[in-house]
Image 1 (cartoon, rainbow, N blue to C red):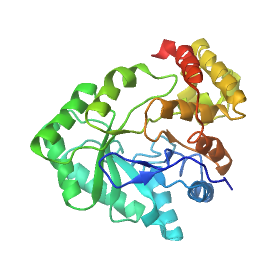
Image 2 (image 1 turned 90 degrees about the vertical axis):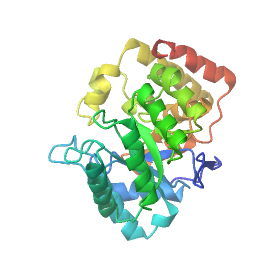
Image 3 (image 1 turned 180 degrees about the horizontal axis):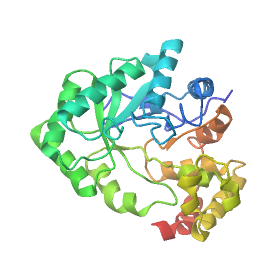
Image 4 (image 1 turned 30 degrees about the horizontal axis):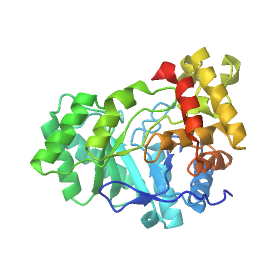
Amino acid sequence: MTSAPTASLTRLPRTDLEVLPLNLGGNTFGWTSDRETSFAVLDAFVAAGGSFIDTADVYAAWAEGSEGGDSETVLGEWFEARGNREEIVLATKVGAKPSRTGLSAANVESALDESLERLRTDRIDLYYAHYDDEEVSIEEQVRIADGLVRSGRVRHLGLSNFSPERMREWFEVATREGLTVPVAIQPHYNLLARAGYEKDYAPIAREFDAAVMPYFSLASGLLTGKYRTKEDLEGRARKGMVQDQLTEDALAVVDVLTEVAATHDAEPASVAIAWLLAKGTTAPIASASTPEQLPALLAGTSLELSAQEVAALDEASAPFA
């Protein structure tokens, strides 16, 4: 069982939602974690003070034999078994499930109802447009999403995988028209993927007071330090996600990450999470295939890096900035 972290809760801007600054990724549920293991991960996360869980209707459509919905189904069964839906801040996404792609009104309405059924709940706390749909104007997307909130089935909105231009337009239109303004963005951001977020998306988040939940916080496991050679990837479910990132520049970052971790008697994963928090993000998303992987993630929420350590990590990761 993981011990309770010392990190204080953080409030998502413009909401009454308070969470530990770690967003547990649900992409492993029903994929690399079977139902029993998923329940064990979720139980340990909650026991350690966590409450913020991120999933998507598409998880895990990339797995053989899956059409998506696996993660939501597991979570719904867990909510029902534990009777704890009220204690959880639940985020899911729409737009990428193979049978429910796009953000048209009809598709989003059906996708939301199907997600609610799988999740065995009557509302989503944070509902993301997973990917932009350029066949639907931003003005229409804003109106459709506002309707979901007005229906009571969605409490708050978020955006992920939009171009900076289209994301900014979304915020501007919603603000100008007095419709529901997203409270969060979900960018790809970590020590090995800095440029896009820092140059294009961070200014939007600051201007519109949006929470930032980075995905791939650990670069699909590369920032845990467990992958040092191509051979380390053999037989791993994440091989396809990691192999192209395993470069000399990336390993140089891992070396500094490991050095900083050693000074804190911590794991590299903890430092990677702590760096993201030091950069002003709200609650990095990280997943755990087993309960044993959770303590390192949770420790990152209370690990305070010195200015010199942040600078050393910044310098090592400069090729990615």
